[in-house]
Length: 91
Image 1 (cartoon, rainbow, N blue to C red):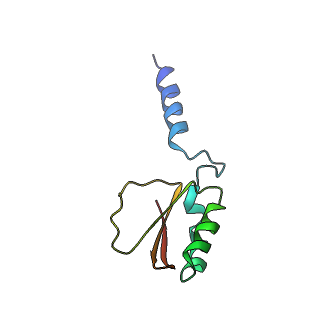
Image 2: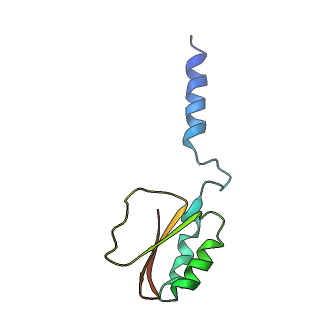
């Protein structure tokens, strides 16, 4: 019975990690560069975010737009007023 416990622990540790190869980094790996998109056009920001491999989904809303609060590491959320980007966050 003892060998099963270490094996189970190893399996759980393997599931808990992000893979270690950067593949699971998603949106967060690009977050530092979002600042240069703030103040720019919404269309340009959407196109730039769509080209980033870790980002699978881009959602757009206004400052008072209701949105779900679920966290998705592969999603970028753009808050815009008119055609001007005000903020970009991950999740």
